[in-house]
Length: 81
Image (cartoon, rainbow, N blue to C red; front, side, top):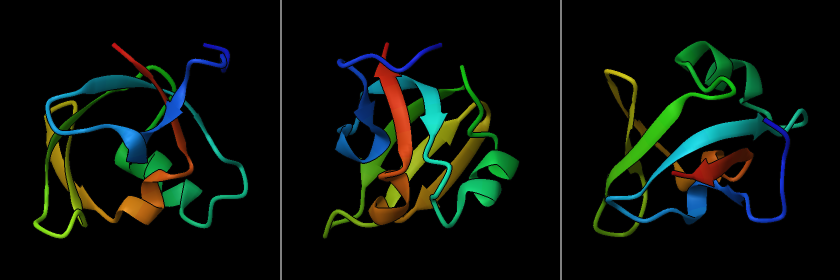
């Protein structure tokens, strides 16, 4: 997948939306950890819910549920499904 102008960062998605990972920012401080968690090109990510103050974000990546800070999701480029 190549990045297109319609792609957004994962931090912009709302609960109930799903998307596919397009790219990770190579300068993101948690890039390696995100890759280890499964944020690879083509992986489907579902936004399940937000905490009351909007942070952390509950995500489903494959069969795994994750809670990540919204700031950490800015470096993940996705394409809405």
